[in-house]
Each structure stands twice: as C-alpha cells, then as structure tokens.
Amino acid sequence: MSAELTASSSTPLERDARLVNAREHRIAPGEIAIGVIIGRTSEFFDFFVYAIASVLVFPSLIFPYVDALTGTMYSFALFALAFIARPIGTFGFMAIDRRHGRGVKLTIALFLLGGSTMAIAFLPGYAQIGTAAAVLLAIFRAAQGIALGGAWDGLPSLLSLNAPENKRGWYAMVPQLGAPLGLLVASGLFAFFMATLSRADFLDWGWRYPFFVAFAINVVALFARLRIVATPEFQRLFETRDLQPAPVGETLREEGRTVVLGAFAPLASFALFHLVTVFPLSWVVLFNREQPTDFLLIEMLGAVFGVLAILASGMIADRVGRRTLLGTSAALIAAYSGFAPQLLDNGGWGELAYMILGFVLLGLAFGQSSGAVNSGFSAMRRYTGAAITSDLAWLIGAGFAPLAALLLAAHFGLLSVGFYLLSGAICTLAALGINKELAKRIE
Image 1: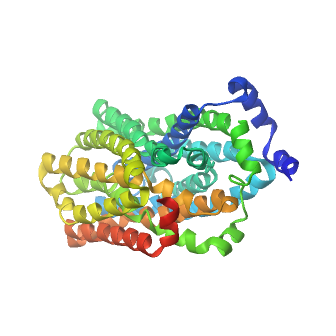
Image 2: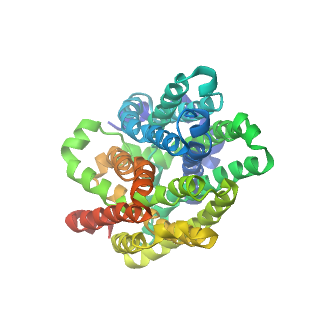
Image 3: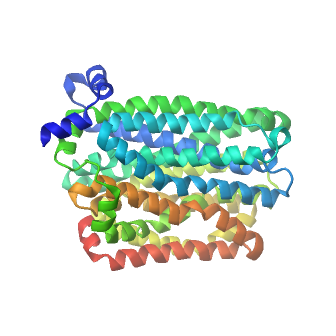
C-alpha cells in the first residue's frame, strides 16, 4: 500500500522540487509556515484585487447602463460566483490529486487561478462588446472559484498535525495571516494607482495592473508550496492517510454531520470577513461620497490590526482553548453587530473605529477557524473533509455577504447589517454548542 501511495503522489515535478529546494531533503517547521503564508497570501491577493475592482471599476466598466448602486449589486452578484464554483473545483481537483499527485494538482490550479485573474486585466468593457463583457467576467470569476477549490494543499493540516500539544493554536493561525496580508498589498496597489492617475486613466488602464501582478505572485506561491509538498514529512503524512485525498462522496456520507457543523462553526468570522473588507468600501463610495483612496488607506491600517489580532489569537487559544476563543469571539462579534455598522455614517473617525474594532474581532475569530475545521475529522478523511467544510463555510458565510449587506443597508439602513452579522454569530454559538464531540476534539 505504501509503495502504491508513493507512486501516486510522487511526480517528476515534485521530485525535482525536492532536489532543487530541500536542503538535505528536509524543511524546518518555520519554512513550512512561510510556504503556507505565501500560498494563502497569493490566494487572498487574487481575491481582494477582484473584490476592490467590484466596487471601484466594474460598475462603471461593465454596468454603465444602470445607476451606481445597481451596478455595484450586479458586481457583487458576480463576486459570489467564485464561492459557488469552489466546491466544484474541490470535487474535480480531488480526482486529479488521487491520480496524478498533489504537485500536478497545485500546478494546474494555481496557473488557472493566476491565468483567470490576469485574463480579467484584458477584459473589454460594455462600451466595446456590450453585455458580453459581463458574461466574460462571470466566466473568469467562476474559473477563479474552481481554481481556489483546487488550490487546497493540506498544508494547514501539516502544520496542525505536527504542532506541539501546547502550540496548536499558534500553528492553526499561521495560514490565516494570508488574508490581511493579501488585503494590505491589494489595497496598497489600488490606492497608489488611484492617487497617481486621473480617474479616466485609472478606469482605462490603471486598474488592470494589480491583476497582472496576481499572476506573478501565483508563480512564486506555486514553487513555495511545491517545495513543501515535495518533502519527506509531507510524503509520510500522505502515506499514513493523514493527508491522503478521500473520495468526496464517501466523505460526505461518512462524516456529513461534521462537515455541516464545521461549516457553521466559523460563520461569525466568515460573515464579518466581508463586512470589514468589501462592504464598507462600497458604502462609503456610494453613500458617503468619499474618495476611495482615503478609505483604502483605512483598510490597510485595519489589515495591520488584523495581522496583530491573528497572532494574538494563537497565543490566547493555547492558553484558554480554541473552542473557548471561538465562542467568546462570536459573542463579541454579536455585541459589535449592535452598534458598529452605524459608525460608517459618522465620518472618518467613525469609519476608523469600525474598521479597527472589526479587524481585531475578525483576527481573533478567523485566526482559529481553520484549526477547528481540521481537527474535527478522522485522519483518513481529514484532508478532503477540511476542504469541503472550508468551501461550504465560505459559501454560506461569506459568498453573498457583500450583496446581502449592501441590499439590506440600501433599503433598511445600516442597522439591518448588524442583524445580518448577528445571525452569523448565533450560528457559530449554536454549532459549537450542538457539536460537543467536535468541541472536545478542538479543545
């Protein structure tokens, strides 16, 4: 069995990566962490480049025939396509993983991710090709989602499975650092081009450069991740079934309850994720009539607080337990939902307070969401189960959040956004309370 698994998981590409990159065929845990951070940052950079363009570019470029609010809602509807397509990507790429190895799977997935992102940079607008522009954008966005499903590499599991007993929270937060780091770089690029170009030049060609950068970042991330996948440590975990892809149907049949409850456990943080990254930018641009550059700088500052909070989540979780931290952060998010959204209508200081408080709470909760997911499955289905659970959590908690929040706020005011966020916090607390077996596993 071991020989069969080795053959199926070792490809020439992986073997070359091992020979070129791994000193004495070993990679230290710190290098694994760096590979994980680079990989996640590249994914989230692609994600945020598209998200920011959904507010600042696509309503004017793709939907100029409707008002700005409607155009932004159309953009957010296309934004959700990636989350719908992501489970499809997981299903298809798991088959590639089983047959051709993880290196082949990651190479295809990351080139698809970078290629579809870069293709958006060449996208003509409505003025050139009419409604076909929206169709092309939808295709590229769905391709991003399929690629993200295939980009699941099991590296968070590699970290958590090898973490010392008293450091599991610290290792669990490492992959999550990619989110604020990706936002920091994406916001910085857009802020630079908006500050240095006229609006006409920015809408004509300036916005396209961040999409070109995404392809280069994905190539770097590919080699960083292949370096880890090619190591004997990763191979050993594969052979012992800890990181072996199981059939999706079998995983859902045998561990469907864990998948469902695991998807709802981090819902508070996943709902908050878009309510401090994508939605507030749309609100201040559409309703507060502020310069986007100013708010992008606020987002960058919030992302810094997010990084610090994620780091803190690792230390806190190792002291009080991950389940306790997830439950406490969900309760704090529920409290935040009662007053924070209204801060967006209180000028610069209100926006700053909303973003900093939101990113601190997001960092504490989001920092441990992957740890809870990875620990709830049997070893033989952990890799596939964690991937499916992550897909569902993003789809349920985050995929439609910008569209839902903007729709609610535009028609019922910012207070309704708080109720939306509160529902996510309630789902997290309910899932943690119901799934006592999972609670014991992640304590």
